[in-house]
Length: 222
Ligand code: BJW
Image (cartoon, helix red, strand yellow):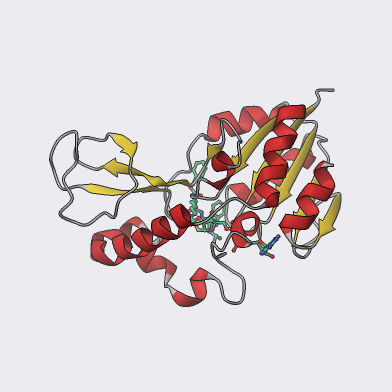
């Protein structure tokens, strides 16, 4: 048996850093229509609206700081073999010291040019007029995985799950696939699964600890 922990994080891990979740009662999908701001079709209809949505979130992200949950996960990786997969598009795991974070839904601080297909670091606001620094075409979009698009690094994630001795999901509602299916995949391979969340998400895990991530993640790590 290997001794490898695979961790999947979601919006709940960054909630106490001031970045909103999606499906909680005051979450982002109660204020925005996800089909307008998080699909390729919405972007084709109204790219300005989508840029406004991600520009605001990029600014919030750059103003935010990691919380004790991010810090504890960075400490854990210094002590144990860990693969850290995040659905989050913020960079708070990295700023807390985690390395080689797998961003399966993309990153707010990256842009993708639809003309020359280059991806690049990007920290400023984007507009429909922003020229690509590589090819000069104004065709930059946020490098984010929207509904209907294939999440990044799926092969790497599959390999990590196959060698895991423990799967841990932190601060995710388990409503968005394929990430929502990782717990079943892990358990089908005989890998125990632990949930750390504000509240139970539906009994798919072998075990769970509940409360704010800034408390329960450091408690679990220590
Ligand atoms: C706290 C806390 C605190 C709060 N402490 N905890 C069936 C099978 C497969 C696919 C589908 C399917 N049915 C439909 C689909 C398609 C679709 C999908 O899953 N739809 C569902 C809604 C049903 N999926 C897709 O389209 C994906 N692509 C795909 O499937 O491609 C096919 C394919 C896959 C693989 C191989 C080959 C082909 C793409 C999904 C892209 C998701 N994009 C978003 C938006 C973009 C990123 C962004 O703008 O930020 O990603 S949606 C949004 O949800 C965001 C998140 O990453 C994602 C997950 O949300 P998360 O993190 O779980 O947040 P919440 O708010 O839901 O939950 C927060 C949790 O934290 C809660 O439990 C709270 O209790 C808790 N919490 N405060 C601890 N302080």
